[in-house]
Image 1: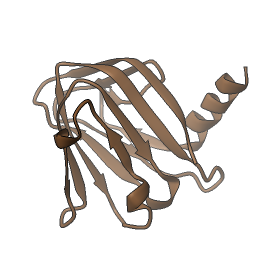
Image 2: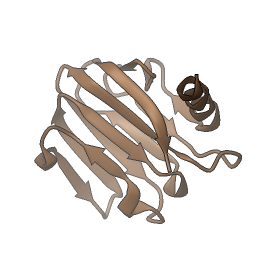
Image 3: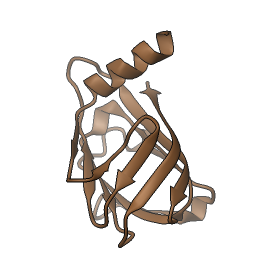
Length: 134
């Protein structure tokens, strides 16, 4: 029960703005081609968020853009191979290529973030989860 309540508070406290058919869910991700989800920060709940999916179909390419460097060292991106993540500091973009599973940790301090599907086709994530990131 505590985990469910915590997850409800996370979803309620983290602002997520999405294009049509783009977004993270507790059990499923769904991103149409070339769509984006924006992850903001809540002033009432100063907590970050973790989104993870164990299965992405098809293998996906995403761009994660951030606005400031305040907590750059706390943005965590985990794929099956670390070489799939490239950081372009000039454009403040992480490029995640050909991922079949993905975990992204968004710290509260450096939001908002823009997460874009660059795959060129719809991407579905299954076996997904959401959690707090302190």
